[in-house]
Amino acid sequence: MRVICAYLLAVLGGNASPTAKDIETILGAVGVEADSDRVEKLLSELEGKDLAEVLAEGKGKLASVPAGGAVAAPAGGADGAPAAAAEAAAEEEEEEEEEEMGFDLFD
Image (cartoon, rainbow, N blue to C red; front, side, top):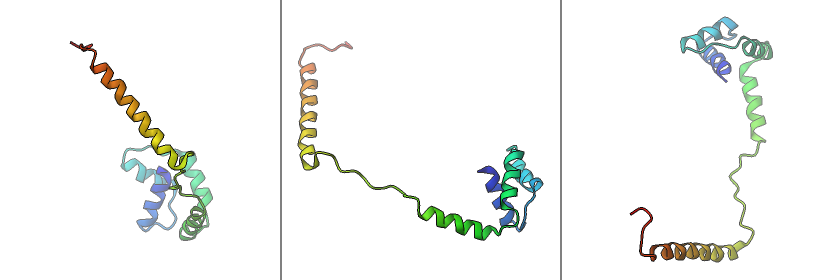
């Protein structure tokens, strides 16, 4: 991601086709060492392509990716709520029993 971000920063800065040296300079300015293999891979894949078209194509691909947000209903439906309340009440009773012993473990 760092290499991609450096490439995008160079393009935003007015350099239509950044070189490996440009990317290394940007990353070096913030104390990050550029991985030359990743820089070369990125440059080879973007060579001769319009960045705006690449971004638009990627945005189209992301539109088909499910974003989540759907929550599964409990298997018991509405009947699950009373069961949960009963469990909570049982836990409270156990705590009360512990309190009624007349002593505290940390005294």
